[in-house]
Length: 133
Image 1: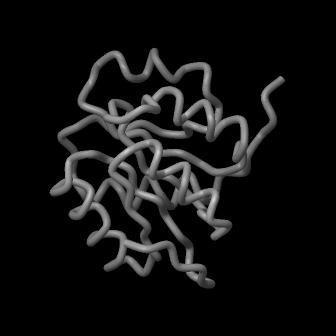
Image 2: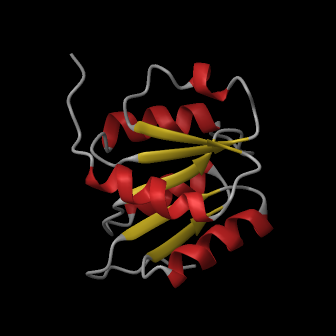
């Protein structure tokens, strides 16, 4: 979907699995969020560079393309540290891989209950960003 600047809370969903990404997007649309989708880290970075405000990110860690999921999260922590990230991953090692990235506020393990997305997203959007010491 094309980025859309609006007054609604906008969530960027990044996952290379089309069905999972589309289902998360549908759930978020039904909850009243604006949703922008990306299937690679490179596409996600390009979306941020369009200038539209992204209020939160839901992303997988293991993504195809020139930019790895970990590099994408490092880019986000450097250039948009105030944007909360919910990490979704099927890897048991994902938590250890992103431990040093403060923008990753929550992690949801695959497979997950889609109702958990609403609760976790509300939590991270309400939690203020705290600059790491």
